[in-house]
Amino acid sequence: MLVEIEQRYIKIPMDDIIKLLLSWDYEAFFFDGRLMPYHLFDYHKHQYVFLEKLTSQKQIRGYINNFIFLRGHSYTLYKLWNLQ
Image 1: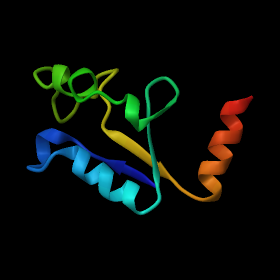
Image 2 (image 1 turned 180 degrees about the vertical axis):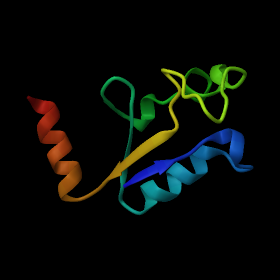
Image 3 (image 1 turned 120 degrees about the horizontal axis):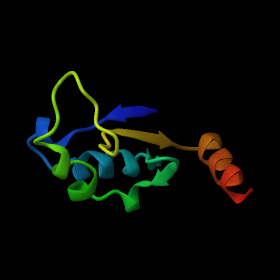
């Protein structure tokens, strides 16, 4: 499942949304050159520092707002793929 989450548009901490999905047995990831586990996401590094540069029509390299949630067989395939 792919979910777009940007702190600038929501009033609750985005981490609360992630934690809710994690409680449903999903594993969270983001893409930063390669698929990275969510625990490596840093709001300041991946979103906050870009806020002044963002426009609704331009995406800036390094700005992370898409999160991938895997569970079951999809997560197993991810683990196997990363072992190679």
